[in-house]
Length: 88
Image (cartoon, rainbow, N blue to C red):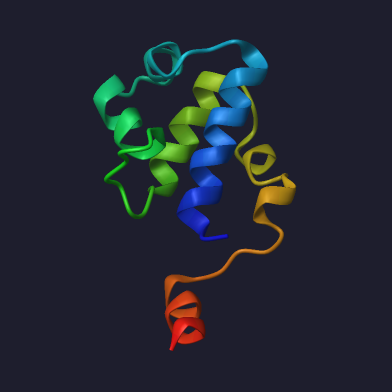
């Protein structure tokens, strides 16, 4: 799985655990809802979520930054380059 996809799924997973919509999570995190939607929605245009954005999301979720990464989603991350090399 590519890192950006894992980040997207992790954000949605943590929000769902707390019963937060994307808008509510954005509000709690001090992020514009449109910015968060560009990261997590099926039409997402963000290709590389910043650590700053993830840190702000962690504040909104009231979790330590380290806990965000504590997920099996991040166990088998591929880079875009690896994926391209495999397809050639």
